[in-house]
Amino acid sequence: MSKKIKKFVSLALIALVVLLPLPVCAQGKIFNIKKGQKAPFTGTLFDIEASADLTVKLENHAAQCVLRLTKSRELCENESLFKLNLKVAELESLQSRHNDILKIKNEQIDFLQKKALGDVPWYENNKLWLATGIVIGFAISMGSAYAWGQVSD
Image 1 (cartoon, rainbow, N blue to C red):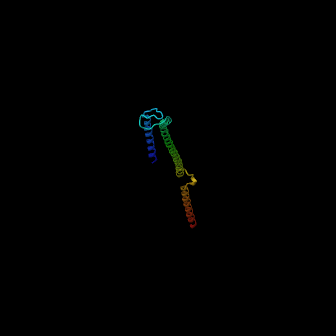
Image 2: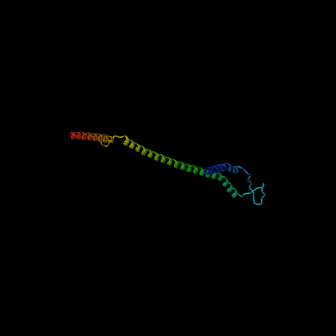
Image 3: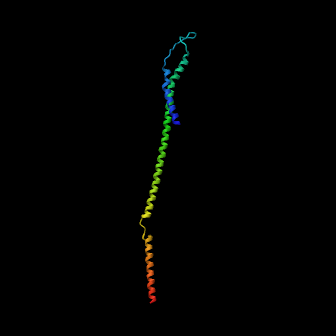
């Protein structure tokens, strides 16, 4: 909604800058008359001070419109630049966060792979203890069978 308002205000100010100088360009008749003298036309008469004031106002009005338009445009540009910089900072922050999380995840994967596939010392190997237990059990069984055989003879 605010973009539409800004666009409308910008177009209105441009129209004012273009159209307001037209009355200044329209040259009317200027007559110097004295008090009590009849005016040669129907209309409004101004004294010198009022006509100078009106002329200055008309000349400065276009400049004021240009200044207001410039101010509005620069304000919009600065606001847009601020919003852009805010979004760029947000993007950089999110990218940094993503990279940090990815680094942690990769380190965790490497750690788990080393644990799963890494070399285990011979004394911590479960297969060794299983085989040793089977061999010792077999040796005890054979020894006891031999001893039982010797006792029975």
